[in-house]
Amino acid sequence: MTTPRHATIRANGIRQFYREAGSGPLVILLHGFPETSYAWRFQIPELAKRYRVIAPDLRGYGDTDKPAGGYDKRTMASDIVALAQALGIGTFALIGHDRGARVATRLTKDHPDLVDRLVVMDNVPTRIVARDMNAKIARQYWFFLFHQVADLPEALIAGREDIWLRHFFTDWCHDPKSISEDAIAAYVKAFAAEGGVRGALSDYRAGADDIAQDLADADVKIACPTLSLWGADFGAVGKLFDMEAVWREMASDLRVAAIPQCGHLPHEEQPEIVTNLLLEFLDGWQG
Image (cartoon, rainbow, N blue to C red; front, top):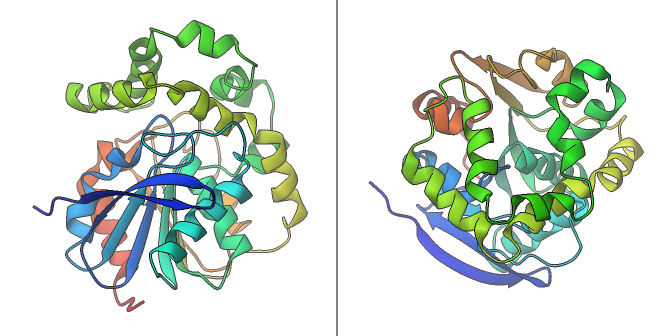
């Protein structure tokens, strides 16, 4: 099994941590909440057999810097563009889950010449969540609202990171025991580190800026081949939204896949299915 190399590089004014493995056409993997680049541990070895794979920790997460600002998705997308440029990379395939899918979507819209193929996993775009918000959606997206409250979440979570994270890893999975204790421990360590909780919450607190950016080019569809996949059994995504309709609104060249017996973390809950879907989608791409 390929063991990824760990490295840090300064790009877009912050120090970015990333995992790297393999060679060939570039694939960039962007994690979501409540995770770090560790989330891709099942996919990296398989993708690295055919591609050069880079999986960074996003701004505010893991071992990447956690500055006071810059969490709007345009800036976070610029982080990834700067990372790619610093590594001498041209075009790439881009795969994002959850918050990472939001960054990936903004990056693809802002820099369409850089992204050859796009995968978005278990994600409803921010402007669509806001546009369709009602009591039913708010019940599922309570954490969007809670995480945007100033200071209070940090005060309540401090010293209780395990309780906070374990709720999501059990409630968001079809099988509440899908995420191993070792994995949960790795995530708790990352979020309990200095600035770890505030960094993630800052991502959510940029919601108003993200919506404004999304509304400005809402009529511009993503042109590159796009794959939207999601867990069929997650109450806040696959069970709540018509996901094919959502992404038909976003992309003109779309494929979709709903993964059975799966919640919000397809790459961790059903890693073999996800890896095979990714390899199939990337097949034939030469960079």
